[in-house]
Image (cartoon, rainbow, N blue to C red; front, side, top):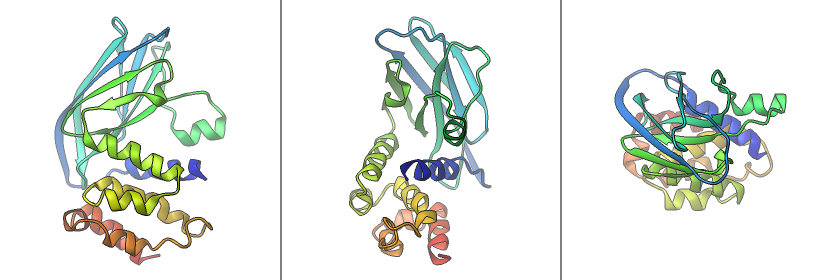
Length: 208
């Protein structure tokens, strides 16, 4: 169940739309503990670019341009490898092909982002962008099925829209069929509801 939600959320995050805003991002990373990885990779969902840097003293740094479409964030996926020609493998491929590939999804925005990790990149600590904190709290709420509580405490966060859009296609499942999606949407601040991303979300709710 949670895998289905993750796949839908990752797909929603990777959709490319019109009306873009470009900005510069910076990600600084540090590895702790014993690890033999030589390269760090960043896959950008907006441009579909895969960046690679060689680890120096167990540290890495990515800089570049991101494009924002309709919302104030985009996403990247960081993974580690010893392969200098590794490719990004998304969650659907990992599940279907039973590939042992770990990565950490991060929210890219208007801040420098710091990543601290050991060899288990999926549990990396991410700091420097408030939306990353919201995203981690959304995942926790998803595991605990506390969707309404999450939105109650994140009324002014676009990540709440991401949550609603992620579970909308699963409305037919027993654990979701009692959720009032219009009610969840109505809890959000006017700023979030009136954003282009918010209005698109409302349209999807109306089309249920």
